[in-house]
Length: 124
Image 1 (tube, one colour):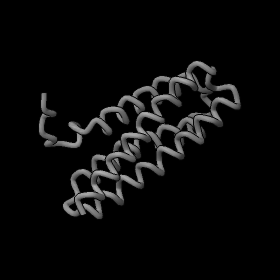
Image 2 (tube, rainbow, N blue to C red):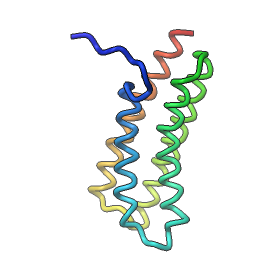
Image 3 (cartoon, rainbow, N blue to C red):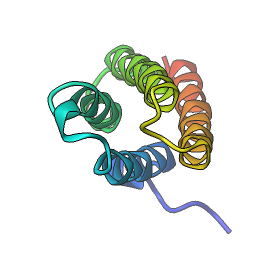
Image 4 (tube, helix red, strand yellow):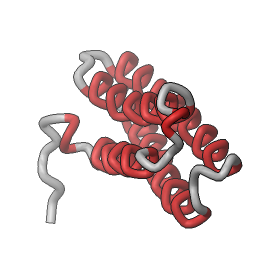
């Protein structure tokens, strides 16, 4: 069976998995201490949202070069998120189980983003 045509960024598997990551980030950060609302909680949420925002913006750019640039920015935001989740784990805001779940989803998104970048580069 063929894959359906990709008409919108929402059709990208990369965006779908990154969106699932954002939703999970919001879920787990709800339990962070209230005094972190404008600290680590805000940083984590902003990094997560930046991932999907840059995928969607890149998808809608006309040149392949611009698309790649935004996908790389998204990859950078993913690395930021990964670092921030390590901090959250190490200061005791995340259980090892919650961290492991987040880490697995981060790896999924990272692989998909790298594949999207490689595919887009092949179209240049």
